Amino acid sequence: MLTSEVVRRRLAAGHFIGGYGLPALALVLFVVFALALPDTFPTMANLTAIISAYSIIAILAQGAMIPIVTGNFDLSIGYGLGLGHVMTLHLVVNAGRPWHEACLAVLAGGVAVGMINGFLVEFARIDSFIATLGTGSVMYAVTGWVTGGARIVAGPQGLPAGLTGLYESRILNLPVAAFYVLVLTAVLWIVLERLALGRYLYVIGSNPRAAELVGIPVRRYVILAFAGSGLVTGFAGILLAAQQQIGNPSVGLDHLLPAFVAALLGSTTIKPGRANPWGTVVAVAVLAIGLSGISQMGADFWVTPLFDGITLLIAVGLAGYSARRRTRARPAPEREAPNEEQT
Image (cartoon, rainbow, N blue to C red; front, side, top):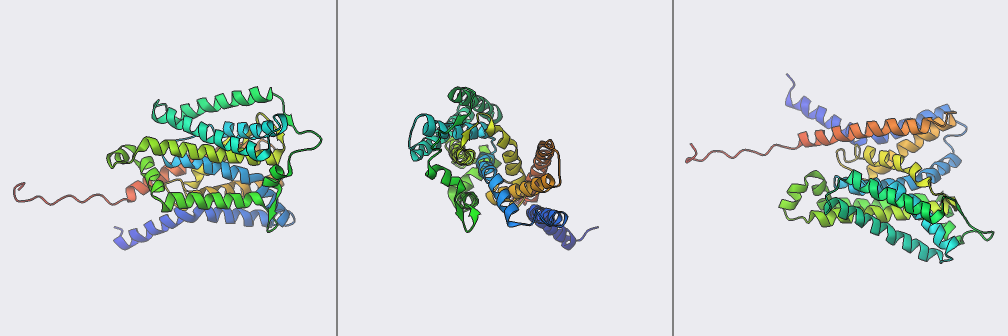
């Protein structure tokens, strides 16, 4: 029979592994690929390439993470990313609007779409999967209507330097997009972990009925969560426009699966059992290191979607296990001792 001390140590070890196993995996993957590819993988050029390739996915993953905190899913983020980047280029190239006005319009549009998603989920009582898939399909149609199914290409003068500089600038010799990821993650961490708003969102995600009973306006905060997701998605669309510099009607869908994989996988680390910003960043790092390594080792093109799909299944399974483990770890409420009248 196990003693209480042994059980306590095993629980502590399990908590440590659950909380920091994913960062350890990222480190192990980096070491393995660095040893296997010493001339190309552990280089500054490769690090910069990884950051450039996965910064937008990391930002989009943070957008996906926000509704997950409330127990909902926003499948429209991939379509929103595509529409955001197309509308940015359309307003600048075709409509001749200043780039900063185009960016503000896209951000406002992202918030509006997020609020529509929230209203559909909370007032129309449509499941978040169905509601956001429907709005995503509408956004994909709007993207096709705006572009006519063709790419948006800037003229000989190119795009404004201010717009392209949003992605191409460097700080400390690193792509500026890396700092966008860090700032966004820090802001979301403060909101979710240090403000009452974040506590309300976590309570809603854990038990919406209990949140209502204690006076939390569930509908208002769920709509706010979807609006936040739309805002972040719009920002990611602007960065994608600055990166691609060509409006592609279908490019957003390529980012949907990796973003969701990262958001779900991130809920298994740092704060196991619940979605959290730093865990999402760690999950993106695991995906980026793994995919970069296997690509440099000569993997075929189909390995990337295979890797994403398998990782998504693992992430969903681990997220569910972490949530159940966290629930079992909660102390059971003590029963009141019967009084004399009851006896």
